[in-house]
Length: 335
Image (tube, rainbow, N blue to C red; front, side, top):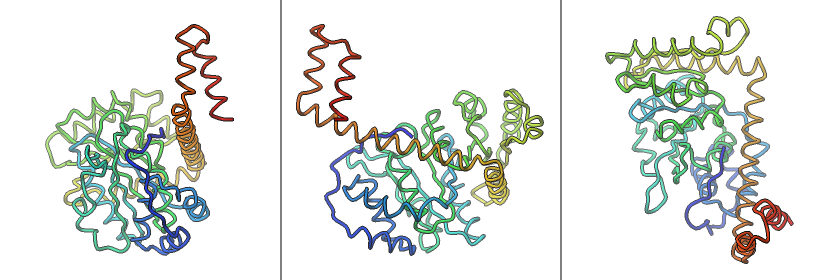
């Protein structure tokens, strides 16, 4: 995923990182919360945190939920949490909220979203601020996922900000991506425009008790048939075809079918080797994002030392072309 520079001052808090990691690995919600706060604050202790978490993380299934505002993502997330808890699984939820323009923090709170699960020790819910990141995800989300996985979560649900077409970014982060749609919102056309058809592993038509739900399902099936391969041909070739399921999340209807579809997709991922490939791509994106953040910080230091300004002046004066100037900047940054 693309890195975004954290907003605000980096945390100056000190923490007993090994003790926090040990407590979090035992499922201590307070320790988990503090570790995620260190991630969000870009704490200087973050490198130590990630080093200690590395051997413990990576086993959790990551399920992304995306869709336009108003389709019922939060209600669906809450219903999925209940379904997974009934199956005896520990569940983590990262609900990426819009940011306050004043504090940079999440506008919507954990308990406001999911009162039903607030007292369940087997559920950890965290609201994270998007902090202006347009892809619907917080820049800290991948590392927060590592914390929850190391804390023993079997499943982590990532619910993104409803920002429309840019929200396809969640597909690069999740093992399985659920795309939620609802009748009466023009979602079929929007899905085609936004490229969501290509990233969905499971389609969920929520609020299926409303008029027009069958039309949304029919439109999705038609658009699938217009792809490079028809669903029937894809099945013959062993490719995954995103099922289209109807739910009424507010009443819990159809949620078990969604969980079953996610499990079937997980089996397909493991059987075909796609799970390893997706996670390798995710790690590659994370490493690249961290490296770019480090380089950006170093460039900031050079800007303070007038190196970048000096190169810019030489370009303006015709002494250097922009490519040569960029080469010199890179050399200075990596020296």
